[in-house]
Length: 394
Image 1 (cartoon, rainbow, N blue to C red):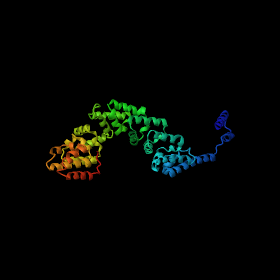
Image 2: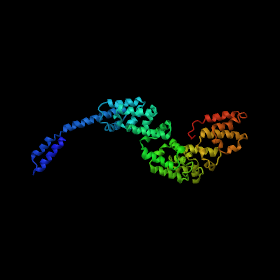
Image 3: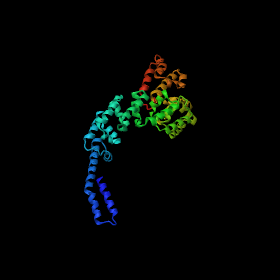
Image 4: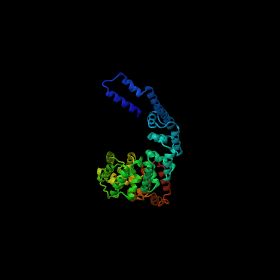
């Protein structure tokens, strides 16, 4: 303020004169004693602080030099190791390893400015009070790093909202692990409107629980995306009143329009028409969730070895959700063995035996024939044991 006062006075003095005088410039520099050396010293001081923190981030936090230099600009208030050391010690006391600490600090270097006793400790204690274990807290922070900067009451209210919605601490932890940044979203502006939109579509109760358990990110989308996803489900001939609406919504969420067309072309190679593909998807939208390699192996086995027509599979797509190695192959070969001995001719032609529970299958095809064919039990066990590397769906 003193410099501004002198500078204003000088300007008035100069403007009141008819012409500048030689000593005016001297007056300016007398009242505003700018010093190149003083400015250089100030810049050196700031640079020194940056260099100190940049080196600290490299040595103690695992940063590379470029990222450390950039992050150090956000940490001007740190004068010594004491503050950042206390934060690192606190995080590691909860079980954060070096790589986890590095990833977190890369996202939020300002965490090193937080007061452990006043900010971090109370917040972590609140997480524990909500039922999160230290390992849960690590997953929580890793998946929602910005929450450490949020006010405690705001975090608490969001966790309590999700716990109430999911009705389970385990489900909450799973949500936190699978859905990065879920707790940074506004409940009032994003989550609640999406829940209301889903309820308008009949997705509530157990159907909503299915969505939250399997595709929780659906409720985290912006409203326009969710509306377009709902339209895609309806365009495929699945009305909101259908019992499969929520399953189709969940499945389409992971499949873009372009990928859906590519999958349709994939099944054309096995003789399916576009209508076959759409009908199969309407009946069992989850059959597409296996990799293309796995789906190809399943189709080839069912057609070439099990002898089913491609059109028959299209009307019973649920079979494509079963494990190839742990279910299809062992069960088919048991049925083929029994058929070769004059049994189960009718069962062999249908897929019902593939869909039976394990207990039911054992009762009908192993226990029933074990006295006549003692080797059957051993054969089935060996088929299951030799096919434990399956990558298909269960």
